[in-house]
Length: 59
Ligand SMILES: [Zn+2]
Image (cartoon, rainbow, N blue to C red; front, side, top):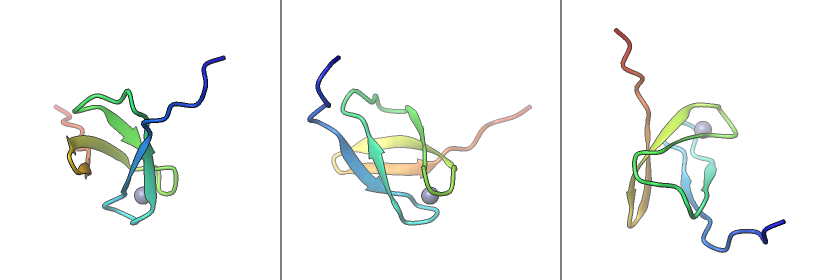
């Protein structure tokens, strides 16, 4: 088993305000899910870590 990653960051969910953990190997544009409200959040910046609501473009 790998040790726990040391580069885990967290940013507040724009929807409910709870801290959402983002793994250190997350890439820009990756979508994570808020554990509190379940909303999909896109990583839009790393410095500082910023999460934005992910809009699924449906045709
Ligand atoms: Zn949330």
